[in-house]
Amino acid sequence: MNYLALAIGTVLITAFSWYFSLREKRYHGIARFFSFESIFILVLLNWKVWFKDPFSGHQIISWILLFACIYPAIAGYLSLHKRGKPEDNHIERTTILVKSGIYKFIRHPLYCSLLVLGTGIMFKDPGKLQLILGAVNLLAIYFTARIEEKEMIKKFGPEYIQYMFETKMFIPFLF
Image 1 (spheres, helix red, strand yellow):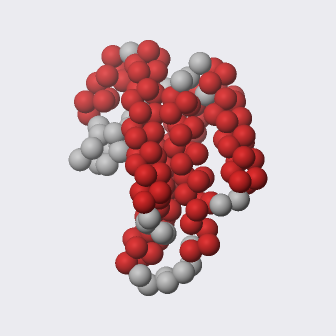
Image 2 (cartoon, helix red, strand yellow; image 1 turned 90 degrees about the vertical axis):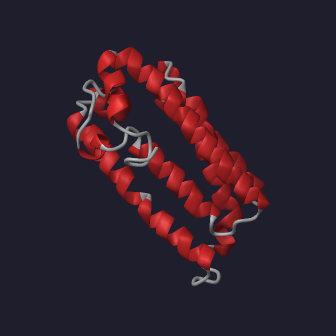
Image 3 (cartoon, helix red, strand yellow; image 1 turned 30 degrees about the horizontal axis):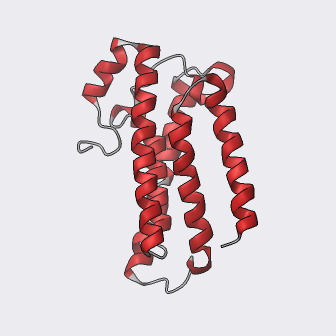
């Protein structure tokens, strides 16, 4: 693994986490940092095997997951941007609770996308370290969503609590 790339990437992820969440006292950015970091390390570990043995089972699963992560990311971002009336065009500063589009089915499509992305990268070369990092990503995304839900309850009150009962976290109709 390239340790210089790891160091530079970690600094950039830390700056991103601070700028978009922590400076505004939105502490879900701490848990989200671990998701971004685990995904980044998975990329560093697996980039050499990205196209190796392309028709193996784990590569096919990987590609399916990598393509599947695109829809929730785009749909979630566009819904927040268009319907959430974000302050300063910043999707983490929505002023309206979005409950339509993809948000009608899941509360956290952007985090769902990160979960699927990390799992897809892990499947490129599913060794012990990759499985551990995949589990770190899973836990980090779960805790990020839970922390953000507490922030959303403070922001939107009973309307968000009702929304939590109406939708699933990550997977429509399941979880």
